[in-house]
Image 1 (cartoon, rainbow, N blue to C red):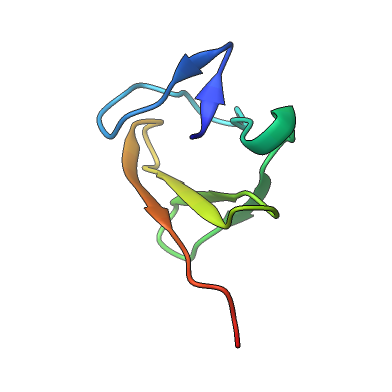
Image 2: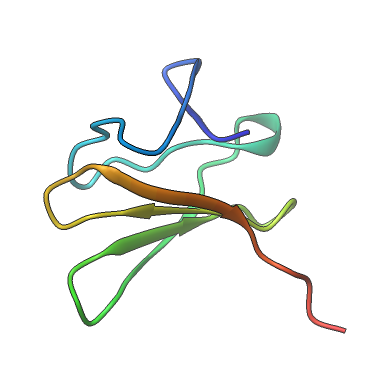
Length: 68
């Protein structure tokens, strides 16, 4: 489960901009920016994706499927 400062994250939480959450074993998640201004933070171990709106709110938390 993605966290920030040891607090579990949920959609609607205000994460702020340019803040990377951590996930499995306190690994910082990889950040990519989308063309519409959203940030996507992805855990390399469990493939959880945290999507942040341009205003810094958590839009979605989902599990990405591994590629076959």
